[in-house]
Image (cartoon, rainbow, N blue to C red; front, side, top):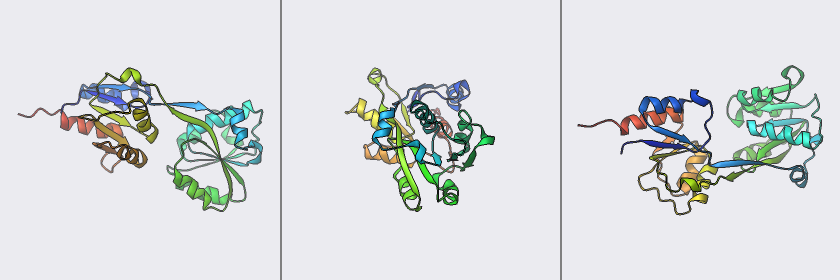
Length: 250
């Protein structure tokens, strides 16, 4: 089957420099971007209901840029002045650099992991006597909770924002050859919007094990699984798949 139309279940990030725009031009395929989920921030009262007092914690664990935004948003709305002594442990460099939006690196103590949550364990153990706060969404990998519970530390999770399915009703009669998903919430949104979704000839691409598992659980057939040693990025995998599918055979 020839590939003509692809839907990425996220907003366009990176503008015209994104590899998907280049892929669209190079392979002459249409690629649309539509966020399948919406982020709704928690209120001050939501935080209090969780019995979270920001002043109780001395180390903040950041595992996403959104958690950074919502922590400082709520700190301001709750009139909590984040002390200069606060320590931060960021799962990736990207998150740590983003943290500069709110603090000055030279005045704060920041530890940075490489990629996975396991990478920051040495820093957590180094400060094991501290009190840790993990700002997160309502969706959190169970393995992160399991890892922290095994560290013999004082920690709490604060749900500072929630993910909700976007309204996709306008896509009801629009056909795509490939649907691309990056997290389980996007799979959920697909079926929240279209409970009777019939895959038929639609190809499904997933990024990450959790997304893959959610797609299988929903009964979908997966045609593109990323990352792999050969294709670490979704754009690379799509390019290969399009090339194979759209090759003219005589």
